[in-house]
Image (cartoon, rainbow, N blue to C red; front, side):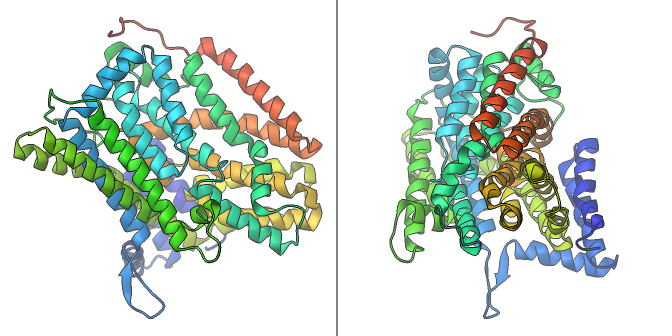
Amino acid sequence: MENTIYSLIPPLLALLMVALTRRVLLSLGTGIVVGALMLNNFDIVASGMKIFEILRSLFVVQNDAGAWEVNTWNVFILLFLLLLGIMTSLIAIAGGSRAFGEWAIKRVKTRVGAQILTIVLGIIIFIDDYFNSLAVGNVSRPLTDRHRISRAKLAYYIDSTAAPVCVISPVSSWGAYIIGLIGSILATHEVADYGALEAFIRMIPMNIYALAALLLVFATALFNINLFSMKTHEERAINEGQVLDPDNKAVPGEQTGLPESDRGKVGDLIWPIIALIVGTVAAMLYTGAQATDGDVTLLSMFENTDVAKSLVYGGLFGLAVTVVLFLMKQLPGKHFGIGIWKGIQSMLPAIYILIFAWVIVAIIDEIGTGKYLAGIVDGNINLAFLPVLLFLIAGIMAFATGTSWGTFGVMLPIAGEIAAATDITYLLPVLAAVLAGSVFGDHCSPISDTTILSSTGAGSNHIDHVMTQLPYAILAAIISSIGFLILGFTQSIALSLVISIALMVGVALILRNMSAVKVDAPMEK
């Protein structure tokens, strides 16, 4: 069943169950079990052992010498979540979140302003999507809560700025990874007209989905665009003051029932976040420099950086600053213990979902879902359709597998091979189409780690975030598909970009009046 159409069953089953039951762990667990059974010819014992082996490999792996060692990437990502949860909890108890919310609402006086500020933060924190999702969420949440902006919309803003910005930024973990892949593709096909970095920069205006998604988040904030279920969440937030659906439980990253000091200051939130940012960036540069052979440059440091380890280093530095500020408040000793325990508890739902998502991604990889989808593409098609076709295939693959980086690794070489075998002038457009499609599929997938962390950063129910973001992602993808068709037929970057932007503006103006939320109750001043 590997590498065949049957390999689509586990991810599609999980995705269908998520949509129907809205129970993430049950749905992912079902997909995991079915996938394991398919891999082992429905042998129950062997399937159980396969799941156990995958779970074990998430935390410990065997090296070349046969010795067991810690799987630092996964362990450090989970540790960073716990550190951030503890930080957030201690900041709230110290009164920092409340003080920042009160300070910000006096200066950012409108809902539109609060949303624009969140979007701008999502754009300027472009170093890494994981870090972006969690940091922007923790900074913006007190402000958006005060302005009665639903957590679902906050999660949308976080998710739809994180990956689109990272995928077009050469100085980011994404950019470094992509430039490395492009370099190998150029070398394989003996392309000497431009280097990997220049190729990446040339592809930025061709990454139509990333640009369309960013334009749409601004339009959503400015024109009050609320598509489908997002309108329900926004109406509840504005008119009832409930930023979360009260019927949902186990919201990742949510802090409830915490004692709050009335002596909190804005600095109690700002300084830990600054320490987190500075510590993480410094650690990324340090670990990248340590792993670089030869000349150490800014690009080489980001290309070789250890993101997971850097997040932990930055998290520890941020937590240390948080603890110092907390102790200065001279609060009861038990409050410190409460903060640590509540912080850990707040991140457990996200950790459970992330672990299940990692397991099903491993199952999907072994069963060959990505290889099957990649095999659908061949060179016997009209070249003009190549960009849009690869955009859609990459989108489907990222949606089904839950990984944009995995899709990059599989689809970029295939796209390069097709372009080299047909018309090398299509190389950059098809590579850009793969990048765009991968981000689109990642935005739609409930098993994507970046989608999970965006929910966590926003303190939103995960499935609420998935279902509310989906219409926005599909709208941006439809417009992007038209743009890629124009790019394929004309090879004019300017024309495809101008028409895509014009379509997005036109659609936003149409939706402006159709999807606006009616305010039934006066807003709290």
